[in-house]
Each structure stands twice: as C-alpha cells, then as structure tokens.
Image (cartoon, rainbow, N blue to C red; front, side):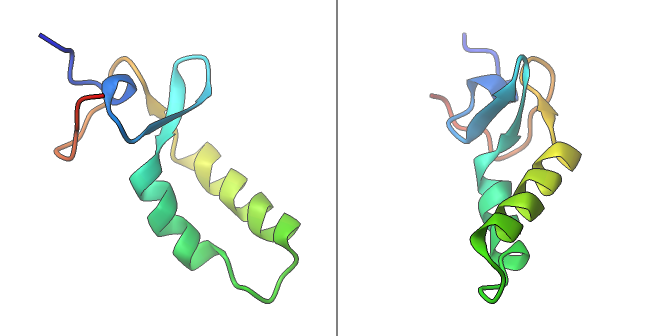
Length: 69
C-alpha cells in the first residue's frame, strides 16, 4: 500500500528537504503571476515567492487530486 502523501504524488515538486509544491497549483498560479511585460527574472521572483507561501509537507499533506508515482 502506497502512502497517499504529497511526496508520493506525481504532481509533487520538491523544493527543500521534506517540503515542496504541487506542480498543478504552480502551473495555475504561473498563469496569473506571469505578466508577459516584465523581464523574466521578475516573473521568476513572483513564482519563487508564491512557492514559499504554498509549501506542502511531503510526508503529511495530501489532497483529493493525488496520483501515484
């Protein structure tokens, strides 16, 4: 039996240690964060800021969209 935690989901993108972000959520956020008019480094800084505010615990968190690796 596979443990249904974020760390064992196909959408989990590790950031550091046991924490990461949901790739699905990051893609959705990127659509609104990236303006197209700003330099790419500014878009990257917005994405990094979003990721730090939306970290999930690889060993504890899960959601209804979980898919096995």
